Length: 293
Image (cartoon, rainbow, N blue to C red; front, side):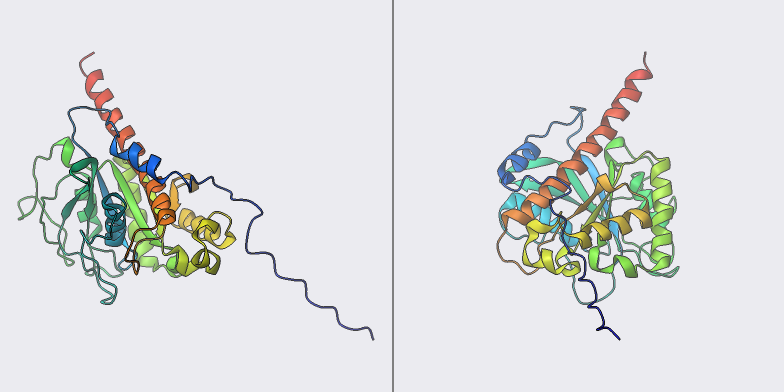
């Protein structure tokens, strides 16, 4: 009887080359382009970006991370919590992004996190109303019931400026495989409603360092990591957002100073978000002009 053969070696965890180009050395150029970004409609000061996701995915941390890039220091504009297990965000709030004394032409809205169950977390109908601009600043979310016309915090006649121009889903890379089916069902419903409103949608995949040891050791391996691409494909299959609109990033969490590689990934994702939001603004402007032709 012959000696047993050794099992084949496991496949390598990396691709031979990055499958997506990343301008690692161009942080200042990416930052400058966003600071000088011109909206398609000069009557608008900003486009509004709504950030949603499951509790603990990193919604508020993403907003803080973007702010940190432009401030050049770690900021805590949106209060975040790493321990409670329930949504730390209770009210609807708008966050401007500043660079020095300049206010950039886009704002973020943070919202209560999604949870499983009918009376836990944000109501999907409240998210749809936020997309339509029907929530007033400071509206306090009620997990038991969505807002209705006439309720405190309901904006009955929103202008275009209050409406959402891009919907951003935040998904944690290390938790994608364990996403709660009820939360995914809610996200799918929100995606359908957002699509009916013709709102562009993007996924920001956070916690990449927790999902892949290679990336934890070296962030620049993010697009050679087979694990990260696999997690992105899972996000794509769960929500339906195409791969070209899914961006893996690492939020600031334990760092006390900003880091160039983290900033480049955040800026690259933000550039795409702002561009598709601006495309939405262009379509609105075109439709308004067409009405008078």
